[in-house]
Length: 146
Image (cartoon, rainbow, N blue to C red; front, side, top):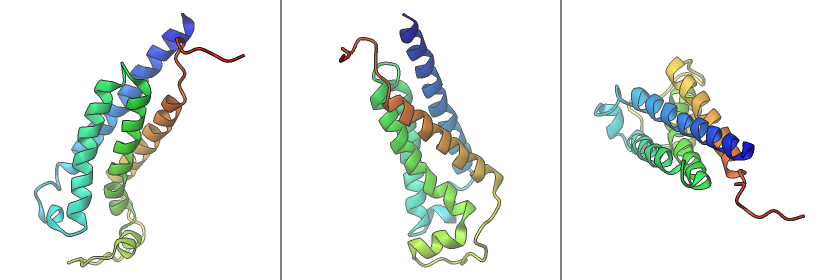
């Protein structure tokens, strides 16, 4: 009984991480959606990955209460899809060097403190950690080996 209650509380925490990640990603991407940034050969793909991550976060939020491990796997996928956009704003020059492409404005700094992007990276890291723990979850209904 106690293990089942802990499991339900953890499912709520897991779902809360997905909700916070969705809101952070939506708020972060809203000002740059539909701008010149979203039309670039590299940056357009970053925005597309961000859009997919938002959809997957919603799906993970809905699935978590019935299939915790599936929700955790979806949460990891969504977090990994959202990270490149945030990292582009925090580490612009290394990101451009790694991805190549033609940029109208080449980055001049290796590290740019962008508070919303740094916060989103931290949220994604916490969400990944919670999801990894969710993948390790064993339900009390599963048989145990002695």
